[in-house]
Length: 252
Image (cartoon, rainbow, N blue to C red; front, side, top):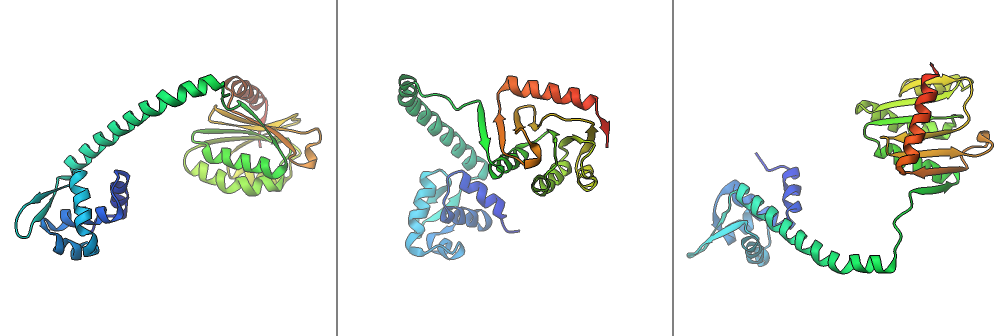
């Protein structure tokens, strides 16, 4: 049974190159062999095979039995992977210390500001992009209030909402009673839907950690301005307000 592409990608995650993966896998599959035979078996140019094997020996993946010709043995995968993991962790830890020791004092000395908690998003295309990004990040729960239901939003949201519900993500959507019947039909197939007589604002809350507030004095003109935020207080307030409205709404 040939080694899967998934396993080959996993080996690359441990720092092996394409040729190194080919060589090691061939040794595991077929057993110890000389370099010339391995070159043919793994389809590695003969001019490169000794360099590849030298790298694998240095990285702890193969051993050499001296002789004429020398034979190359694969180390057990459990041993090679564990030693590679420890070596990578030690390298990262050392690099982290080196980088922090120089960059953190510079960051603090220059007074660099952290990224803002709140973003202003202008224009329908930018707002739709932000909505799409938020839907794509949602993993557990999505709460949506829509004072109007533009077709552009449904076109973007429908496939994502369908995927979310298939993954067990809870989606709750609230719209005005006067919403177009076709829009309600589409949304009912994608989420738990409720309607209210009046709605004075719209937005969405993702996983109790991110909120988008849709603004604009005339919603019928489309999406013109929005606030996007992961500020804990704002998200908490928005969710509490949504839940209050939800409890006082009725199923569509």
